[in-house]
Amino acid sequence: MLADMANLVPVTLIVGEEEFLADRAVREAVAQAQLALAEPSGGADGGDLHDLEAAALSQGELASLTSPSLFGGGAVVIVRNAQNAAKETAAELARYTANPAPDAAVIITHAGGAKGKALVSDLAKAGARQVDAPKLTRASERTDFVRAEFRRVGRQADANAVRALLDAIGGDLRELASAVDQLASDTDGRIGAATVARYYRGRAEATGFSVADHAVEGRLNEALEQLRWALATGTAPVLITSALATGVRLLGRVGAASRSVNPNALAAEVGAPPWKIDRVRQQLRGWHPDGVASALQAVAEADAQVKGGGVSPEYALERAIRQIVTYRAASR
Image 1 (cartoon, rainbow, N blue to C red):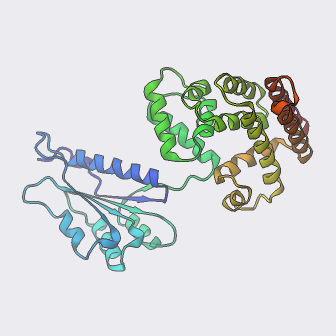
Image 2 (cartoon, rainbow, N blue to C red):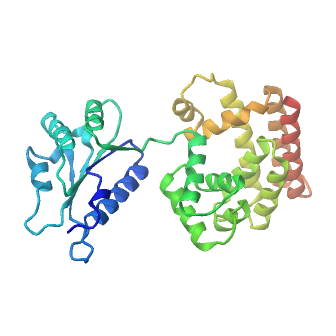
Image 3 (spheres, rainbow, N blue to C red):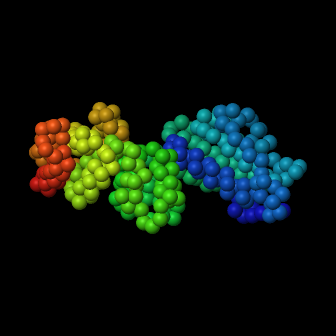
């Protein structure tokens, strides 16, 4: 007797080209299926697991893999990259989905897009449970992802912590999820920007960019807090002025481009990742071109002082940050 067949999902369709999200969805679907197929006595291990490419799936093979075994236990079959399936294989997948085996779970991945698009529609109409795994290219999407990751591990993190983690790690979802797991396991209480900074202080350039982002967004207190922490943990002042210069220059270059320009194309032109373009466009809402020019001049002066033209690099950096925030406010 099988454990809980009511929870067995016969066919799961995972659509999207975000590798991390698709891999996670596959793992979760496999775990759920194996749990449903496992015997209460522990005699069955959750069914035989088969993992193969759709392009390599021969006609009739799916029916063979999902057929009841003499020894029981059911089967879990992963069919990857269904967009590459032959026409006959695609038709077989659709037919199977409409009439699945009673003790098997089939998990199908599809990259999305135009190739094999009809199969996605056919599988959905036939009753497959669909899980989306789209590429997250916008800054807001990555922010939502990090927030969801903290909820996933049962921890609270404030907005500054989420922003700090994105600044430190970048846009790689696998690294972001791993960082959230580490923070959740190694810390207690509500997670803030200072907590994130302690764990990622080795990323000196990211620390400088965090200061820059706070400054160009007009968040003076947060920018000064990040500056003092960065300097206290050994970040070279020249790295911070470099980050400030990059942040202000991006305001100018992205601001000069049409809003209709695709973030990917603009990213290639200015040498920044697409998610950063989305964030800079949000930051631009508080700026006028004259203010950007003045801010860039302030950063240039700070850079000269940091490199030996002034008495205190720390003072030069703080003054530059205050000027950037002031020019942003004046632009409004």
